[in-house]
Image 1 (cartoon, rainbow, N blue to C red):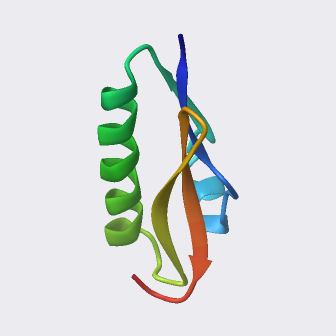
Image 2 (cartoon, one colour):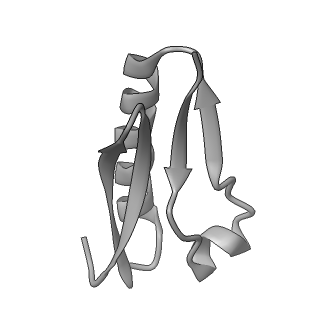
Length: 70
């Protein structure tokens, strides 16, 4: 089974950096670890206009994009 980490919406910073919108994994735990690390990295390295979090949807993880700073 495949597990996906999906960024719900690519902001301007993500588009500028050619960031992928989806990553696929064979292991659910690994997908979760990558999703949390990815969201943390986005919170720390992007412009601060958005905050990023992780939500589980079915067997996948969505990196949510909210307004405001982290």
